[in-house]
Amino acid sequence: MIGERARSKPDLGAPEEVADPTRPRRVVDYALRKRSTLHSLYAGRVFDGADICDADPYLLKAARFHGTVAGEMCPVCRLTGGREALTHVTYILGDQLGHISGAAVDPGRLVELAPQFGEFRVHVVEVCLTCHWNHLVTSYVLGDGVPRKPPPRPRDLID
Image 1 (cartoon, helix red, strand yellow):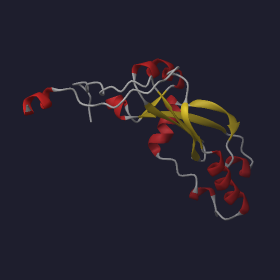
Image 2 (image 1 turned 180 degrees about the vertical axis):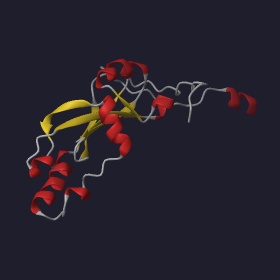
Image 3 (image 1 turned 45 degrees about the vertical axis):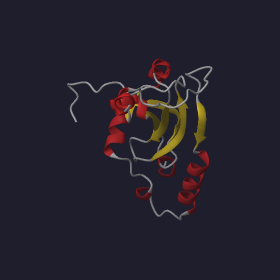
Image 4 (image 1 turned 90 degrees about the horizontal axis):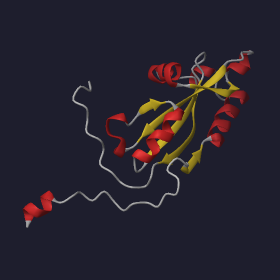
């Protein structure tokens, strides 16, 4: 009896009914938080941009190599007369993704990944490569709703 239980498949949870795995669901928009942060900067409650322009070096690197140019200018650089364009970086996170969880990906690749996994969360971060302003723009869930075990870790993957 105990041996049977050990050999049975692990319970991955009930499937979720999803009509289109590429259509975002459970969307969270962080525009109000961004507006509040910028209002504090413009009102002088944040003394300089260094308090809010603190992008991690890995985020800046991801922006350079995996980012897409956004259609708006950096709100912090605008204070000093600059006209720097923001870059959006798209990250994917989730238990079912296995070793690729936490990776920065091209947004076009999400259409390919969504039907392959049951559920994963997408985070879009805006970054200014000049002043290092960064802010979470939105997050949402993609996937076909069918729970899966993560893919096996490649043998040649370096930690």
